[in-house]
Amino acid sequence: MSSWSFQRSRGIEVVHREREVQVRLNTVDLICLVSCSLGALVCVGPARWAPGALHNAALFAFMAVGPLVLRTLEAMYPGRRGITVLADFWLLPVAVLTHSWLSPIVDALNPLLKDAQLVAADQRLFGFQAAVELARLVPPWLNDILMVCYYGHFVWPLVLGIALYRRSRGPSSDFEECLTGMGLLFFLTYAAYAMVPAVGPRYFLIGSFDGPLKGAVLTPLLDSVMRTPLYARDCFPSGHTGTTLLVLFYAWRFARRLFWVMLLPGIGLIIATLAGRFHYATDLVAAVPLVMVVAGLALGLSRAARQREVVKGARSVPVDAIVRP
Image 1 (spheres, rainbow, N blue to C red):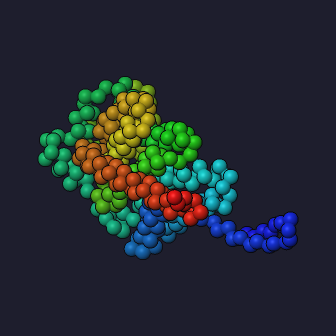
Image 2 (image 1 turned 90 degrees about the vertical axis):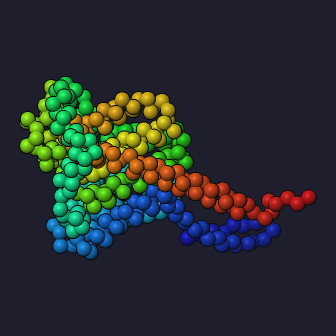
């Protein structure tokens, strides 16, 4: 709150005005707030006995209050560009970091692995295990290329987000719809990890492979790095496939040139989920309807937000501005 006074030529008049700080949370802010709050509540509730639960609850809570704090600071200091950018891209640290904090939640809600059921699903749907078959067909030099593509999962969403953000020099309806879709995808994917925990063929079907994943130069290093995450029961559905399909969808809609740049690496990334022994084919199939649902929800939410802005703008027209004949 603030107040000030001014002096007029025909006397002294003191005017007190109250300036209210209006905090605006967009849809992806609410997704981060709700999802991280749920994670914290589960960690202090049914998962409080699990190792690291209280520590992870504090981390989830920190991520949950992030949008509230940043948007408040943005409203109080509108000229600070860094605060706005950090607030607009808060989903990035949420998506990257919270993945490692899921273990207590899964320990409490669903500690039994579902790999056997996923292997059986692959046999019923396809009659074979895709990861095992590709291990015999993909040459080492191609594994190097596919593994490099696999790491694009951490790159392409950020590239698309920056491209959409820079094009409008700030958040736009395209950028916010893309971020809303990504936020919903991460939230639902992480929830699925808790409901269907699985470690994937590289661990569960280790006896079916002739040896470690072979590569010409890079594969051993890149494969070993993917064995170090704190949480490894993240098989169903394929988050890499879902993220890639969603990024390609938004690139096709909003950044067509970037779509063509992403297309081949994106296809390589999806193939790498199987060739790298990270996923069952069922995981990839399950990612497709999830992406369709997320894209539809994001589109509906984006249209509703734009409609609210139009209505709000119409209501904000002062009475004096109405011209009567």
